[in-house]
Amino acid sequence: MPMLDAAAESPSRHTPVNGEPCVLLKLGELVLKGRNRDLFERRLQNNIRAAVKGLGIKIQIWQREGVIVVRTESGELADVDAVARRMTDVMGIVWVHRAWRVDKDPDATVRAALDLVGQHPALAHKGKFAIRSRRRDKRFPMTSSELNILLGSKVQERYDLPVDLKQPDIAVFVEVDQREVFVFTDGTPGAGGLPVGMSGRALVLMSGGIDSPVAAYRMMRRGLRVDFLHFSGMPFTGPESIYKAYALVRELDKFQGGSRLFVVPFGKAQQQIKTSGADRLQIVAQRRLMLKTGEIVAHNLGGAALVTGDSLGQVSSQTLQNITALDDAVELPILRPLIGMDKVEIMDEARRLNTLAISELPDEDCCTVLTPRRAETRAKIDDLRQIEKRLDAGEMAEQLATSLQEHRPSYGEPTA
Ligand code: ATP
Ligand code: MG
Image (cartoon, rainbow, N blue to C red):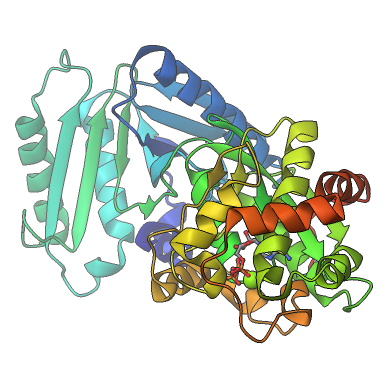
């Protein structure tokens, strides 16, 4: 954050230097090798292009060894800043730097370093500085430590700042690449993880609650492109939960783009489960029917897994025995990225993702309408199958899967 924000306020920023501003992206998952690495990079480049589309800024992407360079056609600082900000939501990127790309010669490097220190907010209080050089091209005439010494002496000469290699207020990074030199100060942490789509596709069961949006984020971060399925209590509840699901997906859409939200009116099915005498098994039976419906929808969309926000023991439907009973309802794997997280941790993450405030808006959760006074914590699979046989749950799921309403909540669109 320091660089992007601080730089935006600095008047000296428009000083021309011998080079051009660009965005330098450091990539994650460095363990990836060979074909996986290619897949990672290709997918990431596509996702970067898709992410900047809404900005209306023309860009060019260069793949360098282990880093990606994004140039804007205009070369305007405002454009480069806008692209850099957008990059912090793109999965697979570990660091986002606003860098100067300069000619591969020591003088140009010195000029860029002096310029960056000159713009740095810590200059005002004579902060300590350090130069950190590295070479990806070992043929460069100077070694990294020679560069450090040269640049360090020039900075001292110009600005009279003390050096502190351990905890500098201003760190200037210099990276000598095959064709150019990149010079930058601080960066912004990226989202990390794997590029969306690299791991395939899955369907997220999305309530209006706190957990499922975080679960969706976690799986997108592991490279899954996700679709969303929400069950509303309509016609026995209002549409509020649908508005919430919509707003949540719109927020999460910034991580993948092109998100789809499918809404199923679930009230009548809940009523039927109730009249079948499910009693204490009502909630688990409902959840099984949601999963069965989700499985059909996922098949239609090419999804290879279901995702839920379950966390072990958090509520009565999430005991180990009940989770086992849920797994039994479908053949698709159910991914539960929050299974080992505390509520406080989940809420912290939801806050960071901007979904918490939406999740906390009041609604009538379809699940609370028909909740029995005492819910079963040790659901028996045989009992559930009995209920489902009486109801013809397979047929119900088929019906529900055809009563979908599709929405396209998009991150760029104005909020109501
Ligand atoms: P959340 O905050 O995600 O609603 P929760 O703690 O309220 O979770 P449950 O209500 O038991 O827990 O739901 C567990 C999971 O089941 C949810 O995370 C979600 O994946 C799925 N789920 C529950 N209700 C719905 C719904 N109405 N529509 C879609 N999925 C749902
Ligand atoms: Mg819930």
